[in-house]
Image (cartoon, rainbow, N blue to C red; front, side, top):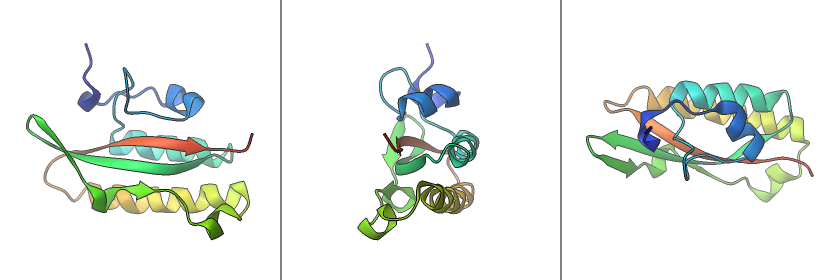
Length: 115
């Protein structure tokens, strides 16, 4: 059985369901997170929340410094395409920082999109 910390997320399922990290959906690797962000750009979806976890041996250590918790009210007034571009830029920044860490960093995400 795949553990949440093993990676191998089904990006299309995360995209379709709007979340990852709980139940059978594994955490996203940095590559998975970038791929999901690229997928969201073309669909005007936004990665609105990211919880980062440093994988330290047997422990998943929450990394608030590599997490994103929602958008500001002003950001939510922007068009979906602008919000998706902003989200993609932030994801890129987080991934670049995460890749500099000694231990792997993995992510749980939540998406937002128009009804």
